[in-house]
Image (cartoon, rainbow, N blue to C red; front, side, top):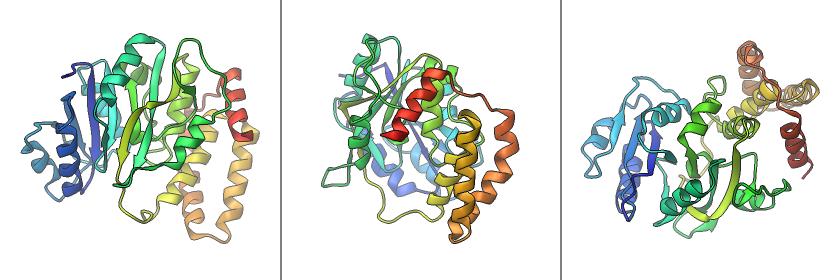
Length: 286
């Protein structure tokens, strides 16, 4: 069942072998989706190896590390109405892309679909699955699944027009915990963001936590507050990060990164509409 509805977009950096393994898995899908790889400034021959792969992905080489904004570049170059995201350690289950495209066809206000993610060769449930499935947000009549305000970037399928209209991933965040802001912006624009467990993605991350990742997540969570949430929420988050910085090195790095990017965040500040802010508060209480 070849598809001309969904492009699979991958971002990668210095992960040649992982990317080639992922391309093998994507090339074996019955949907045979077009593949688009954004190489974020690799120095290990990743781009050249990708171009030589039998799957024949289209390879974009911006010449520098764009972080999550590499996905924005991929979406702009996709020629299909829908784009599924993978990383160099994740791919889609057979039939998942066809299922996602059918749902997007059927629901014109569906902007982004967050898949059920299975981790590792044992296919363990990602803990995020349960969080998304138990979202307290009320169901929408114009969308399937469970409404959410977050997702895993390497296990999501989006409508290209909705993604671009919402602005894609934000330049201030660069990378790390960048999904929440996009979910906010899609929802604020009237698009549905849902978790749909009938669409399945596989994620095989390397064991252990990547150095500095926790700090990036703390930084971007606070910056997201300054970009979209009420000032008391942003101030509370900043004060909490400053308190953590007194005893934690990663929190100190996150605090300095937050302060450095704060002027740019304030220039792009656009508080959420009341209904979306109430939804964000409901999720925090939950």
